[in-house]
Image (cartoon, rainbow, N blue to C red; front, side, top):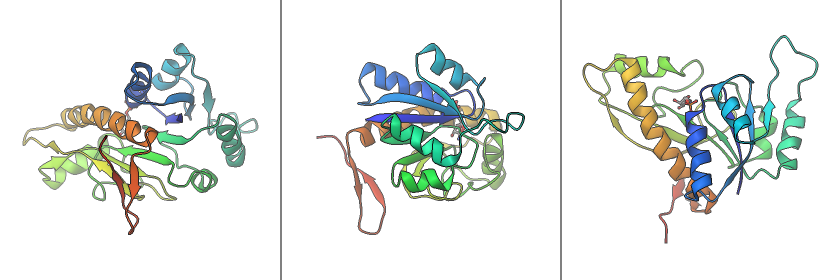
Length: 209
Ligand code: GRF
């Protein structure tokens, strides 16, 4: 399957997915990296691994030469993209893209949705909110993307214990380690077409074999 990954930052999830593809644990190929930040770590990693980088949307200082949302969809189609993977992409996905790739866009969120999600809750703020709530568990959620932040159907989660003395940084680090494992497993599953949609619309991952 052909994958487009969207990142805004360091891109550690993207790297793990790309590595999974390279070693064959994921039967997929990252054909395009989309970023709103052309100098981010994820974009640099893509360039040094021969993966084309597309900047979307363009920064405020370069208003006229950016792609429109429909042009972005066209580019993804030209690359033959099967799945779009959001991995720390901080911009809202245009509705044209959501509609063009129904049930084909995934996002990873660093807490257990539907708690601790929504507009404005990203990065360190998520972990601060978890710690302030007294929740004993956190962990990544991978969900399908619809037209709002963090609100599509949940596909996979993994629990990470919250320690009494955790700082947001420590919790973030433990959750991120779990994100890497979970995202690679989930991408392997979608590439092998192991997602089954329950009648009520809940997606389930079928185990191998
Ligand atoms: C991850 O914590 C992800 O859950 C969140 O942004 C972070 C991205 O990290 N949405 P990286 O760029 O993959 O290292």
